[in-house]
Image (tube, rainbow, N blue to C red):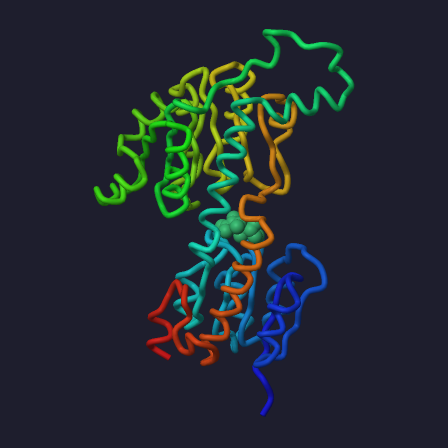
Length: 331
Ligand code: 8YV
């Protein structure tokens, strides 16, 4: 009997893909790129399963050309590239990669926030440009992080991992979220719930960890930036589009906030030119989850989900991080 077909949208860890090859005929793209809807439709037309990334938009239009598709595994915890309603309506299961990346992304959020506060990127660029002729006692003054108020907007599992790290910095944590956490979790994270206006006004270092939804677009725009302290930093490791990048560039230029650190951008990999002109912003190419161990764990979890959806592996029949479990129940 012939094996089902799996399309893997990018190259990654051959030993992990080999686990898929045991049960599937795998077509794997040789290089990382984004695909137009037509290209996706052509690649998925006879696929039974697919492993996709954040730049691969799977919607009703693409699904209409993929009659045999039964499961799509997304290489990321955020899945705004998937139209989950369309997948569910088409009877296609979908999974993401939650939890395995929490700690790695939290590490990186702190790295970016510290870099913005202490001006690491700016100072390195200055040194590399041969400008270090002598030190000034008042040169390169940045903002402290220890003892300062950390603000977290979006308090899911990554937000909580970020909050837990604050204890070592003796830094109080305020957070705002759609819904308030259980008191026990708040205690464990050392975080206090406040409304959004209080968070903006009181945070010395604000970190964004929201999922992207149309309602979250430009959650941080000109008004919110004005409401922050002029000494504050803003770090975005969530999704581009949550921040109005143009308004942020203006706020940085006007000194409305002190610095920013961005791992994600509206329209990435393009970066708003006005941001590129600002010295006081750390720019990072969407790599918060990119540690060797975590990217392997994410790839492995995506493969586990596909295998399980087709009745293989220890979770046979129960993909461990399926987003629309009703689809399999109905099958
Ligand atoms: C990406 C991310 O998945 O998990 C997410 O939502 O944004 C990242 O971890 C990663 O960059 C692979 O594309």
